[in-house]
Length: 338
Ligand code: NAD
Ligand code: UD1
Image 1 (tube, protein in one colour):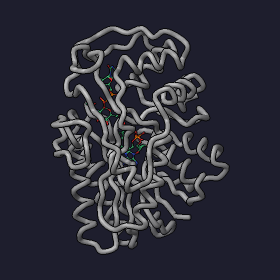
Image 2 (image 1 turned 90 degrees about the horizontal axis):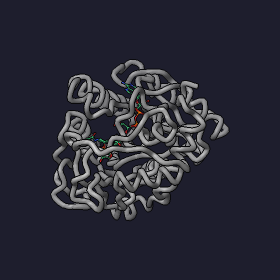
Image 3 (image 1 turned 45 degrees about the vertical axis):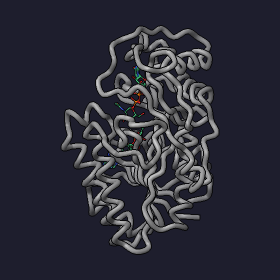
Image 4 (image 1 turned 90 degrees about the vertical axis):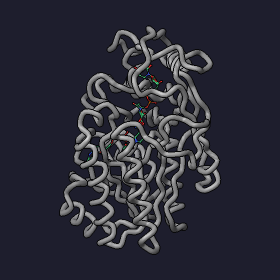
């Protein structure tokens, strides 16, 4: 049993990971300011797990608040999800992204140091790789993010590497997520984006539900099987399990290690659309649009480091991703707002 402080615990990935941690018998404290989430997610996690995480409303930029929580909860480890994640918004508001993602993480690390907490699992992203020089992306691929958001992830990875190098006995796992999708099989928790979704699966779900008219597919002239973009989609429950494995790894290993989290299998936009049609039992209207600026043709993870170091592999496929997304969407048409 480990005492785990989860920043951003009410968020999409944080809530699924909090659930997995509680089910595995760990003690969890969620520290979240609800900038992009609802405390309702944690209420549902409590029902699903049959026990409650500790819940604190607070901001990672607020050192005094972090200090009070570390003093009281005495975490063995931190899983650090809290941050801002919209690529387009990061271009418009770079300083907000640097403040929350970079300065906020420094506050977390400094508080860990003050309280002698030595293990961290950090939410990094495949976006740190930028344009592919080769595929699949392995962890040694050059790092060249193309947005302020991506650069915050790279800077934080570097800060964590420097800190772990300087501090004996510390360990960090930086998980580079590919495209997290799907929802807990209960349909009680899931991704609840504000406004019109930017990402593919939430958009598909809303078209299937009749809340949006049709999917616009950004580009059908890529060098892929069917001309549409190809991604390595990873089920959020598999991703949650990867965090448990990373926590275990960090407890037994010193040093800072970056590890991809994906399936190693790509699906194109059209393939996802057809899988979603099957899951929802209805047709989904779409039209082809020009390419979206900043998009790459293909993104795929090399997954052998995760298998070797974490003894973890994804077990859920594209059908599971679409069925669980549809289950969440149809039970909660207004997300946590209902
Ligand atoms: P999310 O927005 O659902 O969760 C982030 C959580 O952090 C939210 O609950 C939000 O309220 C909280 N938060 C934001 N600013 C905060 C602050 N200053 N203090 C305290 N809490 C704050 O996003 P998510 O999809 O669950 O992503 C979690 C992490 O994983 C993020 O760091 C994100 O960058 C990273 N990531 C996500 C994806 C993805 O596709 N979802 C891919 C790669 C990496
Ligand atoms: C985006 C982010 C990435 C982030 C990830 C989270 C960019 C450039 N990258 O990745 O940093 O980690 O989300 O999951 O924003 N698509 C459509 N129509 C839509 C929406 C998407 O055709 O309405 C296509 C996209 O062109 C792409 C694929 O679907 O080919 C996946 O898009 P999306 O879900 O937004 O993820 P990424 O762009 O891969």
